[in-house]
Image (cartoon, rainbow, N blue to C red; front, side, top):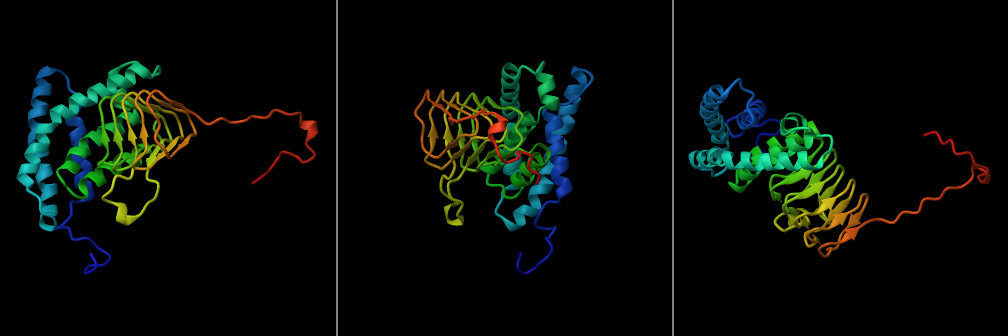
Length: 270
């Protein structure tokens, strides 16, 4: 990059438009809108051919800069799509089960931002495991920009997984999340200290099975483990491990007083 300041070599990187098209075609392949079963079969055949061509074209320039076996990665990734879809249906069913505002799996698939962010995570994590550079980040940031939910492709997230509302959720690269975990808006699974030299260490917490983390809670640190079947209340700051079956909450004191007891006006203007 230093030899060419100010621009990127197109022969070494995929175009943004190509990545966006590939990502949207992936989602359409997993959950196509078709007229009948015959149309579904035809759609799947053509989608497989198109996705293979697109992924090859995206990985080829990257392979000139990084050591990638384009053919092997493409084949392995497309073979994983069926398992990814099966997990996503479990995720959608969990959202339907626990969100009283959801009335069908189809509604979750078509409209829920939390589900969209999970879709993108499950599509990017296999690319991350295949050591594909840049592409997982570009796809993840597409979901981040559309939903406000930032899930690093390197995180390990069990199935099913539930994000309710979701805006402001941040899940760091080395987070480990078990099965049946429910996370609300504004939750951060982050690192205690952000240092470049710690990039290869586990910096983010582990959340065991059946944990619920309510809105705007922050859980930090690679050694922090939230034990299974625990509940972390809203607006909670956690930097130490919690044993299983715990309830963690912040105890606030709310004071109600008579206005006449205040000598200063309470009509601040900022």
